[in-house]
Length: 259
Image (cartoon, rainbow, N blue to C red; front, side, top):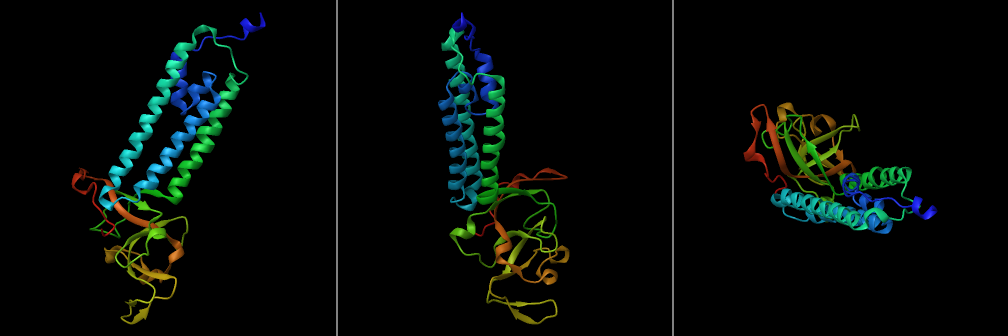
């Protein structure tokens, strides 16, 4: 009697819906805890690895690397949902409930896996690999326009040294919650012309940055030299652009990294 009370049909639609909430959740619903955890780990590893490889591509190919990574992740996600659906169908009505087949365990698993673990992985990619930014200012017109969305490579300067002409993101010295986009005009040891017309050598560990639209740019002419440690990443490609006139198709895919 106890055994009969501890059985319950695995519904195909519910396995699929639960699988949509998080990779592997459908497998947990089907009593395959280890398999579900493994699928989540594979999905997240694919996500991180794809973006790690993406930044090694030439600037003009970054958008295709991002699309490829997202496409592979979606394909794995769909495969995992389909696996849960098929397994639920094969289990039928005589499924023996596991100790963790309880709503509160599903909720805890979702909070841990989707919110905490997946959120941490997403944050890691944004902080350490690559991040998308929307440009709102006019300081880099005409090269970078308001409404451009760009890829900033956070790994670029671990593979190569920054150089004059690079477009970078850096922390605004007067408000460290803000990020500015400017072009490197002077590297350590370079001579730069200051606003008073005098020349000065850029100090060690510092760079001199200017906006391309110098009439509308707050840059090293006011801010002074910028510490290299405050550089967030190298801006490499415009992956999307829109303005009052709609989508700017001619700017999508435009490389900015100097390659």
